[in-house]
Figure (cartoon, rainbow, N blue to C red):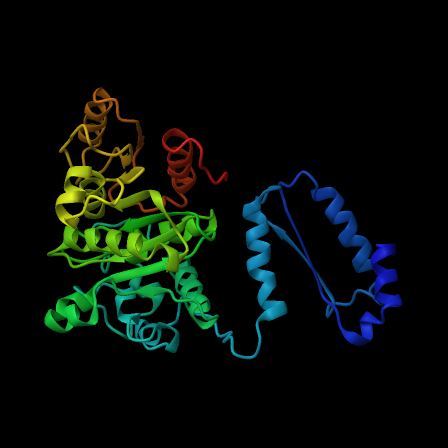
Length: 387
């Protein structure tokens, strides 16, 4: 601290301006050292004033890149935010209509919510976070939906493209239903692997806010490039096939690694992931042989039973109290895949019902970590973002 203070004084930094952002995880092995440093800095309040120095602790954070990414994410706007970044945060009381009409979301804000269900514009994000809107789902978290909307809003306002049409303008003019499709991009590390997350909704609507956006956001925090697909409930497989083609053909522009990607899905979305994870169906639906098979399929709570020796390595989780997808049927499917020599992993969570999403606050908490460990370790071996 003496050294840093001397730098400030020798270079007249107090006059010229400087700022120190200091962070540490509460489970970091050097936490005590960091706190000692912070205490000393704060004791020299005449030099390190609140205008020049802040100290944060990340709850549960360890000595790893995930904590560093979070500190960087929160610190960089303080240094480089500029005057164009809007700071009005979305809250649980922000209405659906307000979100849809935000400049950050252009003409695709409506796709943040199910377009095949009636969602009133005067409903707040807290109101909409319920099973009455997202039928067949449980444990819907308003605070997560707020985090998702703020993440996408801030990313867009910072100049990053967060939504991509998967069909051309000519195709959309010929078929207006194609305008109800697209990919929301939750960016991870440059040129890292990508994942496509597919929400369920019984092929009646797309429950993205609970069943694909949260997964994509958490994947991006771990470094993966995650896409959440908004598809047509009456043409889900065609839309997922097109999405995979789009990402493959634009991998350089998107700055993603097109190989060993993963397909994620819950309920109806899990059927989509499993189907396109099968190399025969992938080639049939895309009409192409130059696109590689998924490195892994991550499935949640679905009764899909078809198996083939060309299915992808598969991770499955489901609740034992699921009244829609029987856990024993899902387990039996994996046993068949294993008989073909395909890598699998199965988890049945005691007492959980259908549609638990990330399982936050339940026995399934940490689901995203376990899925990525399966993806990175058991399947790809050479590639893993450690959590």
